Image (tube, rainbow, N blue to C red):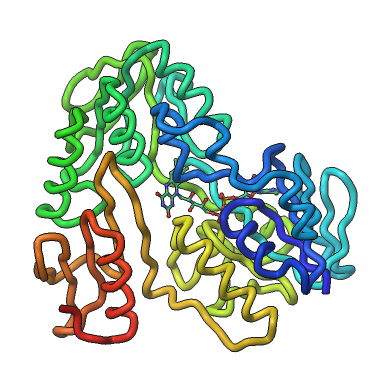
Length: 361
Ligand SMILES: Cc1cc2nc3c(=O)[nH]c(=O)nc-3n(C[C@H](O)[C@H](O)[C@H](O)COP(=O)(O)OP(=O)(O)OC[C@H]3O[C@@H](n4cnc5c(N)ncnc54)[C@H](O)[C@@H]3O)c2cc1C
């Protein structure tokens, strides 16, 4: 069976890895680089790892696995009547097509946008790193996970860092958890400007409703926009992302979507961990094993400076501390999610317990 995957991010590469050997696997990606780790980009910018550490799989690795990797190739449209993917470098026939097209950084829409960089790709990271080494300081716009990772790592490396965020709470967590994250990041030197709305940018800083904040290097981390255009052009249904069912099927026969581009009933998981989980489930389904993804329970693992933070399931509503690291959230006295600070092993135990409906102690 010929499986063609569009996108060589964590979702696409994990699926290829799991199918290689038993399926004829092709990956196309418009970027000219093999898979690299996006969660490591801020470590690279801060100078903690070199370029090589971002690229775990060489061209020979893909070859050894029997994966036909076509880089610098853009998927243009799907000819669904003939089961053919039309690309910038010719047509590729498929039996199963998987859209793992991911997402791109949301652009700021304020005047002076040209003075602001975004971070999604290796090339973005390279440019930010070069500018940072010249300027010695950075202003991060946005208190989501990419903003916090970048600010934390770069501050830890000794650069001067400001973080501007429009609300009081980071990561949309409750006040108590948000304050804990803020304290940890302040310890490494991140300066916070909270509840500040951006009005415009110029070469030397940004104007907010709380005043002018100077800073020549500005990086926006306002979230992401799913890459759904290929699907839409090909007549596949999409909303914010590409619509899928719990079996990761799109509205078109033999076409699936996984990772950041996929939307299930209003939910886009949006992390590397979930993209990899989708890939595992799809690999099982393609091997005709029964499986589905529980979209009510996305979880993620981040590292902000030295603090590991796990967000598990739903992290809003009635929350109680189980111990000093673990805050569990309940609905009708049933655990529905948790935040675990500083302990990856504990996070894995808690996630398993909540998923399986067990008591957590
Ligand atoms: C700086 C940063 C830090 C992050 N930190 C974390 C973290 O700590 N933990 C975590 O879980 N997640 C983290 N993430 C998020 C994580 O990287 C994404 O959720 C993950 O990469 C999504 O994987 P994906 O396979 O769905 O798509 P992507 O990684 O976005 O890959 C999609 C690929 O598809 C290609 N593509 C798109 N359209 C086409 C087309 N038409 N033709 C050909 N190719 C195409 C793109 O070039 C891209 O290579 C971070 C992201 C960033 C940017």
